[in-house]
Length: 554
Image (tube, rainbow, N blue to C red):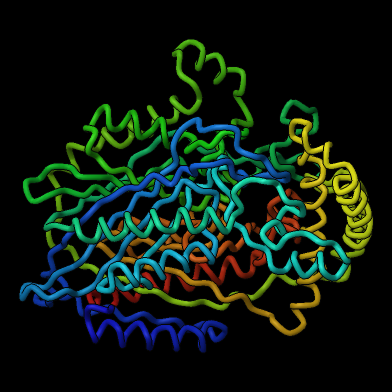
């Protein structure tokens, strides 16, 4: 339920304006007046936190990578952490709200987001479910949530009898399917949201900027103009690391009425990709939580956000041996090293944050739909013979599809005829790897046809103002340059860019430089939106942010 009729009308009008005007270059989001005498400027906050364990209780498919991995145990639990913020006017009436939820998952599918909304709508009808933001830490050691009706159609077209629940991987893997995990996780996420909402009490916030050297650009550029994800830097033709690296941390601290710290939001340009194996893990965030709670108390809540980091990784491309030596000397794993660095950054500015708590910040939250132009798949993209990061065969997309379809059908038939093959360890890797590549080729061919009638892709973004802080979301693995542009040009004093945020998976959104280099995240098979759409996303996001300040400047 929307708590303020004027805000409801504003956001409805905004959505209509945006849907009609994005291609004309006009996007406006009106916040309530933010003058010194306005109700909004005098609004106080009510803040609530909660967390939930979303670790599966049975084996699952682990998401991330180009082949299925079946979980073989739990290395560390995975969590959902919810922060509810509501602004209250002096007369005690509610003004606006947001519920931010961080998930130790690879991404947030539309199916998961929609199911969470349904459950929250039923359990806590006073919550405006459109003001819920789910974001993923992009760990590659958490359950898969993908349901693939398009691949089910592909199987049907070519006479392959795969259960619908296993369309994503092309074979029944005999563990908890994605649909079942979604139901399991959505229930716990919804409970955390309800508990955070019900736990809200008067409080304040402070925000600041700190630094930790953690994420690295993972694209290696060579003298011939090409670039490669995780390419070898120990080569005579190694030229440079392709892009910029952002070691800043955006930090939002929450406080209770007595001035005690209750939690911290950590916005960092690095996905959770240290771990890659067969055990469920929250990656470096588990070590970070342990270290921060050791310093700040077990009751502290920690909500991670990944800033624009589509071309970033914890994996070092230079100084690899030196870093490995330091891990031995310190006795800490890479995850523990990262946890210490993040914790140092959080605690180093804590005294200043305690002295600068804002108890009545300007608060506004806009939700908008943008229409971005799809990346055009050309005939040349389909016919040019080339190899890719995962497919070393030099062939066209058509050739890839035809070859892999034959190989996949042969593998599938062999498993049908010889089910005892499934008794071998990791029997599923060859067929799911082949199917993963087949699905990419199929989807590229389908997009070539789809773009003839659908030239744009609708995406939902959230833009939030808390005092002089802005938070802006997107559903992409957004290359760092776009986040840098947003932060540099933002009207806010500080801006948190949050990628992989609900709803939907927008794929990689690469820069023109990366497209020209031809690395994995920039090829047509990996991207729904190209650099042109990236610039539009930047411009529209900045317009939305500016609109939350325009009344104040006027």
